[in-house]
Length: 272
Ligand SMILES: [Zn+2]
Image 1 (spheres, rainbow, N blue to C red):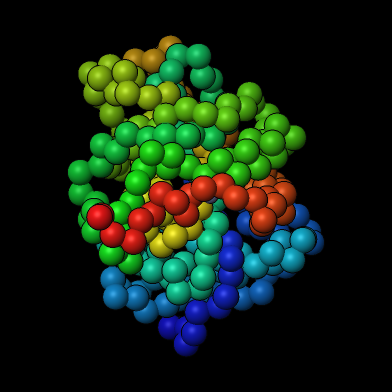
Image 2 (tube, rainbow, N blue to C red):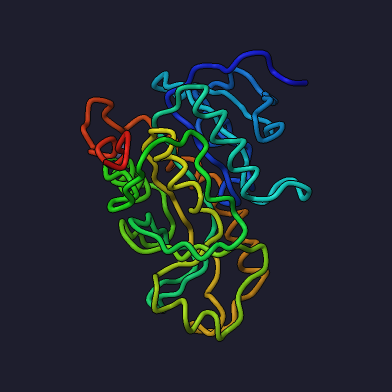
């Protein structure tokens, strides 16, 4: 059923594969309270996927949605635009995203955590038109320093692997993985490879929100270190889901709302 109004929330979590192995947020923190569930909204880009509205233990209202890898019939670009339209209408100002990624940097191992500070967009079929538009989006510092520091600190408490507070994410179209030759090229571009940071990172700036992403390495990219195993990848997703959820919930409550991160200065009303 289509929901009539947009609930107010300052926070959003765009869920991916990292928390799929558990019921987010209840399994990670018993004092997080689900306020509304199965909220579907009409947007100019089609009906949205179902959202949940919850409150953290510190009382912060947060919209959450499983965006990555859902609904076969809707393209990744379309679904992103539906989701960011809803976040804009709800007044969301701070966004966390999570997903599993492959390692391009041979120093990284499965279960390591990377909170990227930059990206290279190699997607080919995602609509580059903004949802709000009318602004020059400067991508000099694409990730919010306040949000990424909160994620890195919380990851230090809950993660099973090592935690890296910077790194470049190469973003590909997917859903297929890459060939060895493609990875040989891409490893000169960045440290990890994933399919979700774009368009999220710049759509966040388009709607005037801060953005940071929590990525867990689930496999070596092809030709890096050794052939990855599907069983290991699946086990990491299942075993680490609650830890990933705890990191995000802790980070939401730890961010100081008064902090001036500077993200707002990177969205100019006009080009001139
Ligand atoms: Zn910011």
